Amino acid sequence: MKEQSRRGLLKNAAIAAAAVGSSAILSETASAKTEKLEKKSYPPPKPGETPLFSGAVSYGNLLFLAGVGAHFEGTIEEHTKHVLDELEQKLQSAGSSMDKVLKVNVYLNDIKDWERMNTVYKGRWGSVPPVRTTIAPAGGIPGNSLVEIDLIAYI
Image 1 (cartoon, helix red, strand yellow):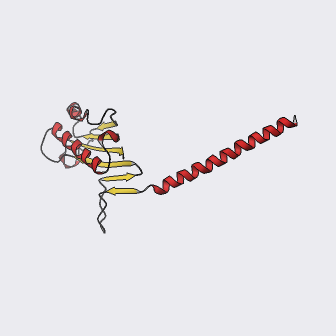
Image 2 (image 1 turned 135 degrees about the horizontal axis):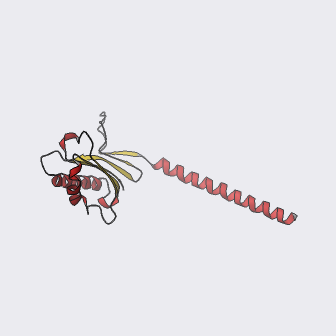
Image 3 (image 1 turned 60 degrees about the horizontal axis):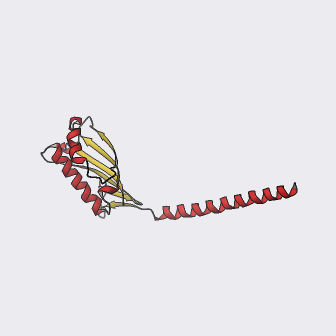
């Protein structure tokens, strides 16, 4: 009986030691990763300037792009193509691409444009398109754009 108790005690001690050791390793790894993470703005703000917002911000390997609209006369198809082309250019400038996009928000000036916008939108994102939310804000889109899109990608 005492032999089993000693074995049980040793086994429990070994499990506890392993748990403490792996916990310490995970903690060190997590803090090392956190120390390396840095919020960066693209392009960086000019010295002495405080911008209203950033056009793109990265944190670790995540990239957040501000909404892009099309501020010219045109159709929903023309506006959608323009916005997607602009977003693609911004992604590439930051070291990402359309197939690395994880989440997209689409804001339509008129929800009736949903199907026509989709004809241009579809196929731009690689074989696995990002998740998406599409809304038509009650007040419309700033700057009279028919569509505005923002997104989250990885680098």
